Image (cartoon, rainbow, N blue to C red):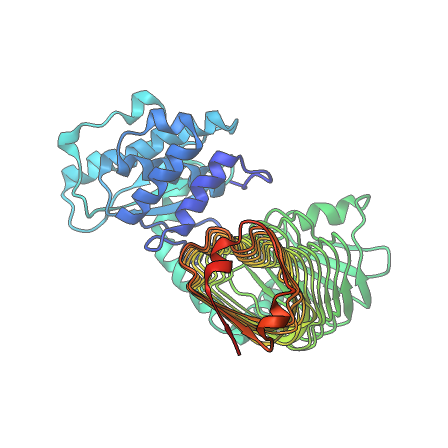
Length: 560
């Protein structure tokens, strides 16, 4: 089942609750129609709070922690379809998932499908197998459960929704039985790039291309309808033409795409919304991947981007949520706006030193990236990595244009940031990074924008050389910030810059400061020491200190 382009707020909140749980995260999707789930107590609690906060329908429906998790499971089924494995959960909750699935589908205007539940295979009596197996539809009559027939808590169930309308129950059961073999097969495929290359060669060798055609610029294509393999060859760029119904038809049937040597570019929208595309092999002659070239290919799992590619266009892979391994090679210079927006399964990311531009929202909502390294001095656009909620560590070498507005906004698990190079820190750049503990800046900051570190509630210390101003509310609501040290040539500390830094004890600022705006240090109730570097009492007497900065004025002032 294809995920909706626009997910309702209630639905997205539950999915986010699932992803955010520390002990319950998405596994790598081993097959194009599978997703694995494991529930835990922490997940129950997380979903509980999300449900109660976001939707009255769920508040009325759900009456236990386990059932709240079941509601989320039903939403995951609606969103992704396919196969899910539920561990350590009682059978009544499994049947509750089936019942809730239909109700939730109705709520979101989605036509429900038949659900198939496969019980555990190991250590079962014939009676238990008969009780738990079979097709369970999600109507109220078919989901009633007798507590006396419940299977032990530690059982494991497969819950499956057929992914095409014409797939019957027997086909779906057969797919569930083969899950382990498919998973192992896929892991071996993704483990080595050479195996990927061999796979494309083998696919081409054994394919029978009964459908063929030619694009406007002379590039040709061949399609095997039995294996759903599409090969494109020739010289020049792949240009998609909506009026070419033959090519439009085969690209929407393609599972494996092979782009051969000689192709120099993949044009704008060339494979946009190719609904079945699972893997793409791009030759080393390609230098450009155009705008929306592979956007909304929601089953695309594996893609090779060779070192010959210089530019990845705007939204090139946007919403390709199942890409689970992304390697960007040296030679790439430009990553366009929203290029990988919403690619939800990328575990880590290294951006090579050749990259000079990371566009706005380039990796926004890449919700499984845990570690980021930017080697070169790339310009970082606004919201480039915002809402990467699994990101824990970021190492950034910024350009003179600095870190863009909201670049890391709402990276709620980000704990450690190391920044080298000189440039400005944009507005809201690290705002709402509530887990941020350490922020190290080895270069010179030319300006700290408004709300740059707003509500970084775990930040305990900050030290940097700064040659510009500290913006409005730059560190406001950093309630655990106890020591802030600034060197350089700062002239102004903005309004509410350190508002509500309740545990701040010490602040060090340069003698170049001429203005401390209203409420800059308001509600800094524990401020005891102010150190002024490079000034004296007579010079400091001329500094403008605005209203509601009493704690700053009353603190011990030390001139160094």
